[in-house]
Length: 239
Image (tube, rainbow, N blue to C red):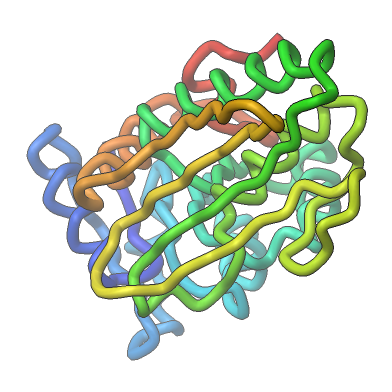
């Protein structure tokens, strides 16, 4: 399969290495120094572009890739206020995007466990829930896209919560705290606390390899497909 990379930081390098190990060809690499190359014939020849850029540039990258007829797999977070627009474009046949806040296979299993635990907790109102996420000091946005996905999974399945916040501790809120330190790839902890005990689930990434592998697997899955997808589709979790 022919792949293009949009964004060539640490994640881009990890994706390139794993893609080549799996027998794929990298036909174009786009970063801040050669943005015009997204309009090149080499980029247009890609079956899929894997995009890990910045919150400010992701949306424009999708539009430019769509205009070249290239499917996109993206893990960039911090832009999802425009997600309805992208979904509409994909539904109308004007592009194909597979978006996930986290491509790690383990994290996506964690997402499913988080939703199931929230369903269980509907019957036990004595437990309140909060979340903490830890990432490296280079991560620009907070809370992380993964934390927001986890919070939304709770809100969808726990009737007493209807929004998340980094500030409020109101009864209807899933509170998210964040830390930025060192080179931590990503740790997410969901905690349910009652007056007498505490239940905690945690996912801790040891490196970026899991994210990169998942992104390549997603690119393999989406090749030849059209529309809007997520890792739920890749993992077979879609209900």
